[in-house]
Image (cartoon, rainbow, N blue to C red; front, top):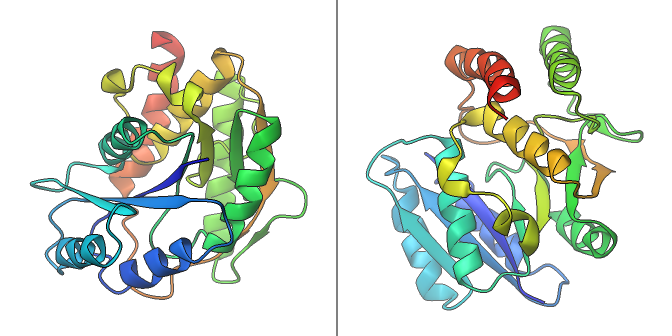
Length: 235
């Protein structure tokens, strides 16, 4: 079994080394890491290069010339993971909002389904105490809106912590993915459901980052709202 974690990064110098080391020391059969860095000015790319030297054949880095967006970063990482022979591909944030300790649980759960979703809204899930009421309401309303427009069954439509079987990503023309940010997660969820893949939601404790700064912006929220409608019309 070969599993790869794809980590998109932009200014994650404070988190990347710790994240990669924790991932590589997890009790799983074999795990590699692919870092996709968008020319971070804080030196994240150089840290990624150092990690490739420390962990040859287990850590890889894709350097991109500028900040090109989360969606295209995941596509680049997925394509490299498939080329490296991955059986399972995990996507997650590099800022520890997605605890790496869930990865073994995901790889166990994926044996009985096609996609595992680290869900903030499945029974038993928890949100970080830093989440204020406004943020909770915005997230809940966005999920409800998305599920109503697209008919999605998954509770956490914008989840960015997932595990895919190889065949799932091979069935999707990744080169045609248009979305970024939350919208990328929504489009992937819709395509997986439309193709009839079995999805299992695993409840997680979603934590706020302790180091660095969030990349969330109004543009990302607006794009997600628009892309829901665009995805419904296009697909």
